Image (cartoon, rainbow, N blue to C red; front, side, top):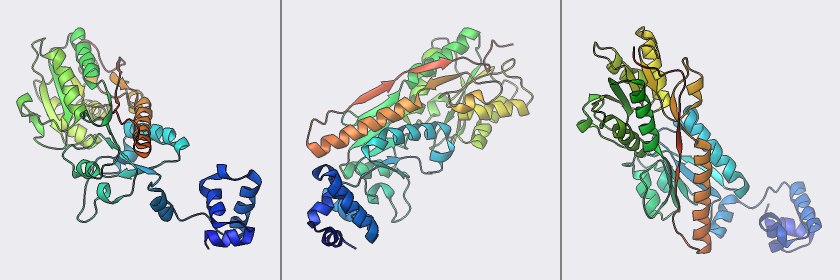
Length: 348
């Protein structure tokens, strides 16, 4: 079944049938309706997408590069909120969203092989080859939660300012024995000295800087633990390192609310009352922050605004490439806000 088959049935040219699918504004409503009705009767669903993409030089899809596991997109509540906002923003454009893992397995390298018109690099391991492959393909890119690059549009949140506010909140409450629970892919992991900390992500780096902006002038050298990932069991491993000890801290600043959830569970297992004996602060204002007990003091970032900004920046970059217009990169930094709930109080 081809365009010509439909053209012969209706008595019009092949180009007219093609316009009925790809350029409907070129036809009268009545003629287009006749063509589509004939196509439906003959079981023709439209031009082959691969052939259309080849002819137009576009795929109609954009990629988003995540961590090495795509499961993260469906299990992390912050990621799902971010992706939902992107999908909603892209809906009117007709662009589809393709999830790409940042890992490669032998001959399978999604960032190199999947046909897309542009990509969002989201909280991705900066050492990943995926970023390099996409850059070499000269695709329009937007960095999200990555170190900004002068030549590439980026969307970040004020991680440093939010972390600074969280640390100051604990100082204002009177805490002086403060710990940090970090997360990262590359070692070392476990209890670490600040000089040993390897920062492998923009958010991790900025949040650590923000905490130290407040703690260092106060003369506080925090106890630091670092874990491989943000899953609940990984968070509980890090929390035990900080809490199952005689000189445990009175407060813990966590990389994320998911990590803070692990701290709350370990505190309960050890019989520590929160916030009477331990204050806990998260980051993100993940929906879990109001589901746990006590509710979690945290730093709110607007993940939906971040998703909308990222999608808008990418569609603008793609349009600029197609039209040959000005390609001045956009750099957006969204505000954060400290939200005080039930997990923090003065030290006993």
